[in-house]
Image (cartoon, rainbow, N blue to C red):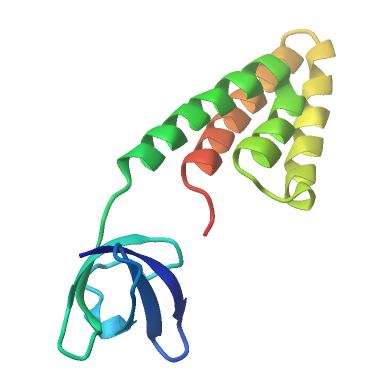
Length: 147
């Protein structure tokens, strides 16, 4: 059966899965057959035992979400390239859905490095290097959000 993890308590090692039929099933960490830790909103495939508990639980990869993350990552690359430090802020807040307080420091650092473009040659190298760095970091952040 397919389902989605509604929640998992790491202290008790127990959780709940909502099956595709709408029924809720309890499970424990021992029933999870994947190296990853069970997390809320993970899509899973599982079996049901006689006590209506989920057993032999495996993660189901969400291909649509993976493709969406790649597209958003490429958008973060382009936005950061064309808009520099403003693109860093937009990529982190809008695309990666980070809180504003987490996006401020990288944006300010990128702004300071952007100002160096007014220094001939060395400033240009620093500007392009820092923009490339933030393009890569923003792409990674959008593709691998912190859970």
